[in-house]
Image (cartoon, rainbow, N blue to C red; front, side, top):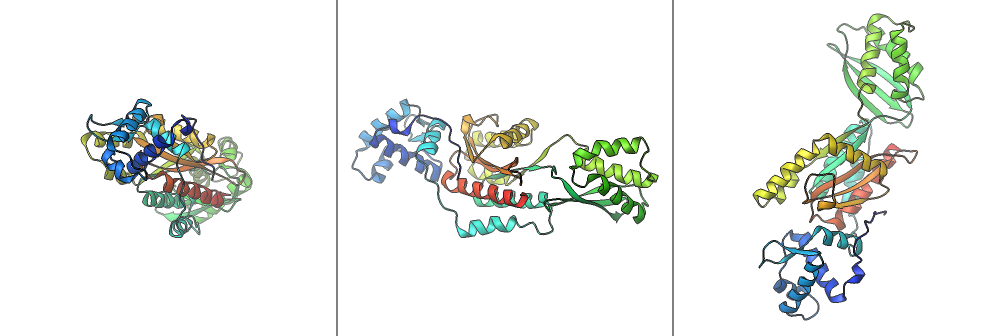
Length: 353
């Protein structure tokens, strides 16, 4: 498993005693989300240390910027810097269960479903397994096409079905002029198949548009409108991908105060913004393995307090086309969730490739 590491203070700079106390504090925080006090630690440590000795070590770790206290008399919890050092130097990744693998594999079986539907289900499953919000960047169809077909749905609507050379099927419903006969649908299908086979929809769209405008295509008026409607639906937008977010309600389970609620509200707003969408898309194109963003170092969101684990997925040409991951509080279970995100990304890559 390739997990990208972010350079941080070396864990080896800590003494064995400090490292053991630091590990216990972080592990307790990841389990409960709450600060840990010296008396609690003295009962859990395998060595015999008094609460006073533990407090001295905790003070040193706090001075190093690895721990912090919410209140003067409260226990300690890891800072974003401390969590980063733990993730890079002490985190031991767990093993997925067979049930988790089976759940992900089941959702990745495409059958007759479109890629969009499959990824929506995968996002929901990832959210359920992690108890966080699942995030997926879905690429638009940039693969060479094998077949396109228009199917009348009646009442001024038609189904456009795209089949890529890799066998992926995508479909959308479009509006067409009322009363379009089946012969016009078939003619539109034949016209586009002759021009799109082996090319992406974006590669051929401009040529087809110019041909229609110059009236070089021998199509009747209704057929030309069907062709134009299909092209406008598939190639008319400027977006290169779609963002799917599932399980936002999971983030509310960790709310303990009004400040937490405001943090979650801001996070929801960020997930709807074009800025975050663009940043996530750029991340998908640049990342080479599982990436972990913690708190304030996560520049995708307007405030700290959230963590994101994300992995890219690639097409059959090993080109990154999207990303999948989870967003949650900084005390999410990194050891369990990182393998789940990595495995899901690899399964999607197999589906697309």
